[in-house]
Image (tube, rainbow, N blue to C red; front, side, top):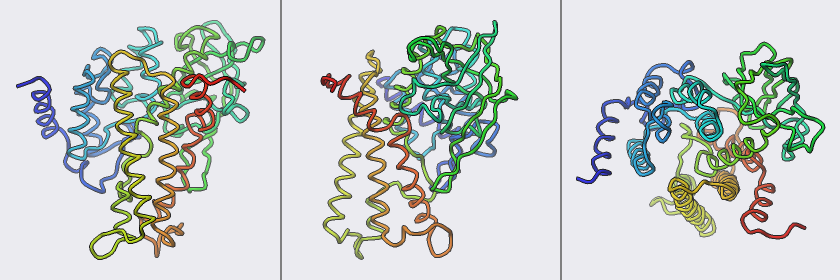
Length: 395
């Protein structure tokens, strides 16, 4: 028996013994965005079991709480999870952004202190990047960090901070030198969100949801041992983290298993616009649905190839901008097509004559537009692609 086949059998047996059947049922609520302290029941059991196995972060080194799997073993694991419809046990910026950044830039002490708590689902992280006057021009950030010897005192504000209402820690770009070129006076620091100087203010969106906050800092303390990289050289660390963020968005982490929405646009079209045999009657709509499905599968194959190359020794760099751009644009177009399929049934805002699925699709359509801005707007990604990948001359 070859090693991959043997490993697959071991994975199947472990999942049969350790994955609660209730979390795999269609329509089961997904709690992946919440840390251990916000979980209960089978969802909590699933997180604990996966963390104990090291499969929350399957490819991280074992000494940091990971599973130590290679690329092909992880691929088998993901296939087996998908086969039984198991939800992601834990997700978030700790795993997709600050974790990989610490593995690359962190000191051994920082890795030992922070990574195991991420891999166990104990700590939830948020990102302190954008400011009211520093969005796409991120290097223009003005949040100030004063050197106080063994710590920094941070004052300023961050905005559009995803998941900040649940976060335990923040990774943050701060200005530590105002007298040099703006990219050279930035440092990358970590600090707990429990600091009394941190104030969180939710931002209500047109979709009715509030996944974002504006954060205010009043003499927030960040220890010097939690500065990642060198003083005033945080821009290098910050840019690398953005590549991990774009990779996670472009690699399929946009959205999640919504209990109220079918994930198949073909099934949705058959349900709302199909005849008695389930055939989509409108030829123009049928063509749009088919094209969306082709684009989705082609992009999935491309993403797998790029990821495989990266795990073979090539570090993903500017290709993450291509992945992020296409994924966010494709996500927006898919939600627009879903609304088009619903027709007048997409006009609902409150429960009543509209189903939960119809209301959820409308909210998703409103929210998905933000993905062309989040993680770097599409215009910025196109600029990076033109300059760094195609090497076109600047205007």
